Image (cartoon, rainbow, N blue to C red):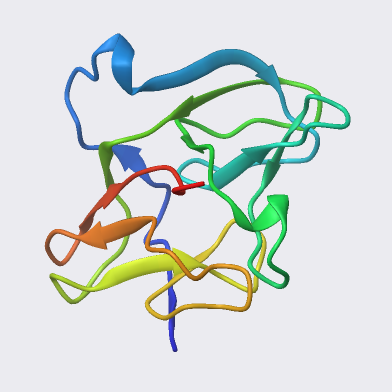
Length: 133
């Protein structure tokens, strides 16, 4: 299992995502969130947090991916079924899963991240989607 490292700040590779790719905007961050982080919407407080795969619970699911960085309490836009410029020297075809580190991804399953949430397209780009519930 290897964490897929961000190379710089991830940016959207899908040129003009249609409204169907937007999970929502104007959500509030419950913590600092980076661009390209997999996130979930916490039911108890309605805030967005970075997904983490340490346990098979709601936090291990991905409702969407942050379009940009947001500080705690700021607005967050979540997208799904889009491409991001994400890393460097990645292996095309690798499936991606939620990591044991909040907001990170890896190329193998974790305790809570048993379903793929993305795929490496080429050395620098990934295709991402929401968890299957």
